[in-house]
Length: 130
Image 1 (cartoon, one colour):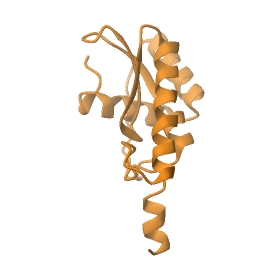
Image 2: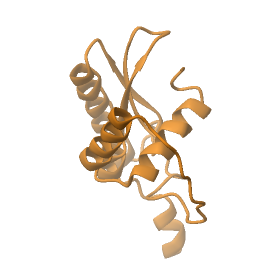
Image 3: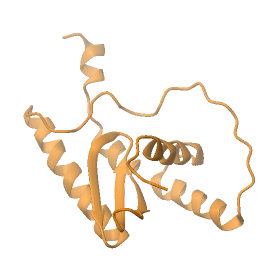
Image 4: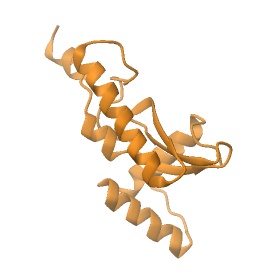
């Protein structure tokens, strides 16, 4: 297997954990934590903390399956940052929403654009309902 092919199949557990987002899901009446880097892994809980802990546990378990070579649910096709090719988005937000977005980006060590992309991806794939 050539080096490029091997790199395509690398799972970055830390990147999955760093890109995780926790939101309240009205339909399920619980918090859901997911990462666009791991399509089929999620954590759910009655509190944000429970949801995050469940997500971390699931990622850890699935990562061990990945390392063993067994078929887990981690998706090796979504490694690292999304490709470039961006457009500028100018918008006016309520100050508290802007502050929350900045805080979430800082916590996740990501840009605010990456946080918006992750949230949009979760809604687009119907992982979170508005």
